[in-house]
Amino acid sequence: LFPTRGRGKLVFQVPRGIDLEIETSSGTVSIQDIDSDSVEVSASSGSIRLSAVSGEIDVESSSGGLYLDRIDGALRAQSTSGRIEVNFLDGDLAASASSGSIRLSGITGDIDTVASSGRIELDSVRGRVRAETSSGSINGDNVWITDDSVFKTSSGGIDIDLENPLSTFQFSLSSSSGSLKAGEIRGNKALQAGSGSIRITGNSSSGSQRYR
Picture: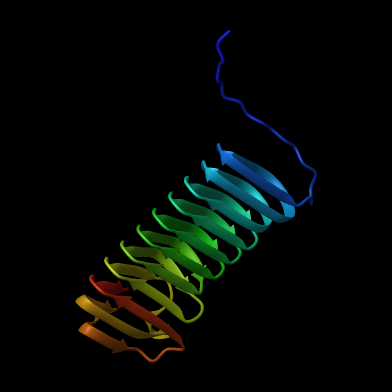
């Protein structure tokens, strides 16, 4: 007899309100329709997918993407190698990717996101934002800022479409190499513009910045 290898799948149904802690060495984890106080998921090699999950959520993958949809509660998402996608979150978000892009859409809550190597994309978000990438651009559409925010990239441009009136803001922008623009006001190297109550700080070592 020769040994054989196959693929398998485990399916669990859990009652409402139960805390979940799931860990896998190799394989995809999918969780949906869960209402819990706490959800913790880690995967050494494999993607993590959550849909319609409520609670305080912590997900981490060493090698694999994180795909999170319709989340209600504070979320921490960390990927060492793989992209992060979050769609429709009602809660604060902390997301970091060492190698991979980060895409956030439909977020209501404060955002703290760092990508070491990859771009950051924001679409229809509302809250305070801190977005930083070492190598990659930062792009935002329909961004509503509620408090002082920071956008920073070492290599790449910053382009943010703001929903607030521009009179809301005070811009403090700097770039070692690249143009700066806040509304119709332009600058090079450094730009101070506006006298609003919310401060936007932008820094790019190599890349242009535009806020509109």
